[in-house]
Length: 290
Image (cartoon, rainbow, N blue to C red):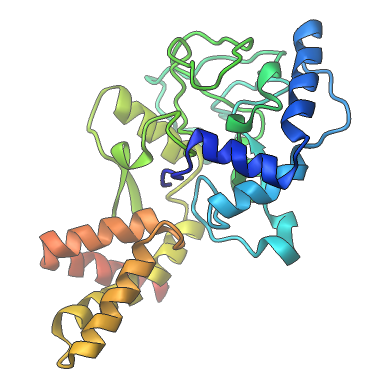
């Protein structure tokens, strides 16, 4: 997960350019929900601005950083995700699911609510693009928090009371994911060893199953060639080859690259401790060969 560096006004400008009447329609619909004090549905139109988020997210899932297919011919693989659920909230973790049953009981995660965050159903900063795995299978109507739930919240940046445990990656509304989660080889790990930021990292990693083999094997498939590019950038006899390899490394670790947080962490490790980086490279290579 990385921070998507799009300014608040920039995102609004992009929305206005893509769908000039969208903001007005969203305000009208939100006022209707405010009057009824609940999400009452209606014809949905958040899909009208889906491509805005696809573009600012470099066609990647906001949570697992999987590169999705192009917006023009395969937009159905990109799902508009409501960060805070709009209609209702289901208690998390669901201990009936094997991959969540051992989540630490020491971390408070809030409870269920029959009412969702109805005033955020059409808020531009309650959206992100996610893959089906992260959105429909995992995220669903869950929204774990450490504090007191407030479903009447009008601005997603005003979450001090709720103290949400998941990380919203767009703009600067929440903590930068890089300040909370890092990578040890292909594994996502909390940057902090204890405290609130540890709990937030651990919950996000566990919630989105960021270390499931369907992600770690794909990260390994990129980390192995990244090692080779780093080695070439350092040792290739010809200057031009070193320059090309350096450019390839920069591209792999850039915000537009798949699993760029993992790749950037590996490059940082390589620069600090090449021996340790080689161990992670060999482990990734073994993972690929299973």
